[in-house]
Length: 492
Ligand code: SF4
Image (cartoon, rainbow, N blue to C red; front, side, top):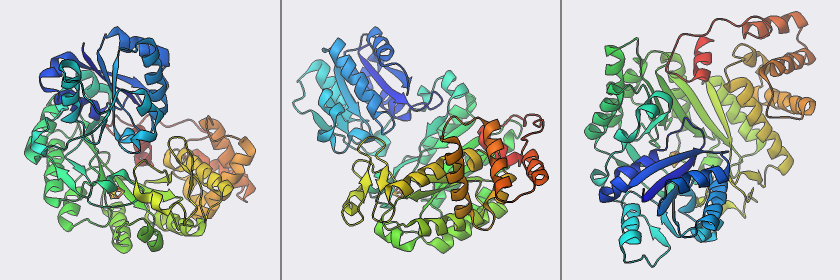
């Protein structure tokens, strides 16, 4: 094997789409190229052994915010035990501020931006000369039609056990300053018929879960409708063997034609990730995010009332100009709209994103280590930010987990953010932990909190029993392609 394409995925179930794109586009070098994926947490020396066992001349690593530290250790160790090995880096984490990074210093070459054309070209030059003079190579962006789609490279094992990431387009026309896609300035679609032919082939091979990584699924409604119709056809043809599709949406653009299609999906077959980020117009202006809040709220409410879509809606704390009070207002507003999950994120300063322009004015202090989470800003001091971080963690455990669907609305009452913040502060004071809290213990803590805030013991017991705590759990839900935690929301 001459060229090894490698990355550390966040989980085994995440199959790397980026590596498969590179392999699909290796041209005449494809026969000498292989993929070797690892999972975060693997022992560095074991990864080194496995890489060297393949006897590659070149190793290309996909570097992301979640794996940069471990990949850096891996590259450093590889360079010690096999200094002859040529190491090429690519991926969003090394595409910006490249010269400032230790991992880039250790590597031989870095490809920034799109690697589909530039990586194979660079490998050809490394192997056959002339030796590339530059260390950093700006990725050439080819016409979309010239990129070979990678979906045949999902193995039967991938199809059976892993999430299949797919994309009908790359890029985003919006400019939200915290987001790397803000640098794209536009979106580039793949040929939709060619793309759907690949989806057809994947489906014929048994694929049932399709996760679209398109930054904005509902940008071009004609294309969105075609994609939705593809899945509706599959559902109509085999209702007992359903497909499951996940899309990212902008919330203020949901024309009637799209709504009609969405309403046809049965429960457990469609999931939307919707970015609100902030309902505060001042914050939206600060981060150049154009969003019609009224329309966005109407659309989320419509989706809740008229469709069976499972909805994750994102909010970000720590944005410039967002106070705890204004964030709380947005949180309460969103909760009232009724999405299944509120994804409570804490701002991260991704390399290359324009949010850096606010650093001085808003006193933005970021963790210097990945994932560069905000630690404090002008409006939220460090200890308050840590309370928000814990809120996010407990929110995930209690609300988003779908394990307390009857209890959470009672716990939140009329003041959702304030109530949950009080619960979050209390549970932290009483457990000193935000991780490794077993479900049984969590249920006990939720019960104790409800008791301490005035609920009668019998009512607490009854309420928790409705969520299956303290009584025998109900029989398992029927098989579904939907993720387990969605199944729990659906069962509520
Ligand atoms: S946050 Fe979403 S809409 Fe905004 S630039 Fe990023 S991908 Fe585009």
